[in-house]
Length: 137
Image (tube, rainbow, N blue to C red):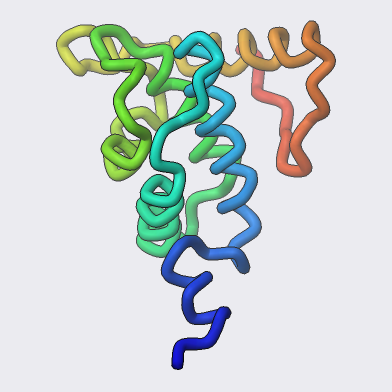
């Protein structure tokens, strides 16, 4: 008989502090761009995120959140695509969002982060325990 802890580890890494916060971020961004609909198949998304975090232990929450936000800001992407399908491609979006030819939109990454900070402040969202201020150039 499998223990409960064993089953939990297959769904998501509950011991990684980034996991829960990033799951919230993914769901929040998905809802924001899909008329409030919750992200589908969150169990599969949790599993994909778990694998991504294990493969990238040195990536901070802030870096991964930036990649998620840049992905949603990018052009010519399917905003309704299930998150588990694109999580493995987050390294493409770390620095900047991508244009319709999948090329980085140079300099837009910092702009995107400032815009989200302003939106969150206007909506009175509580900052994450991982929130940091972006550098302004």
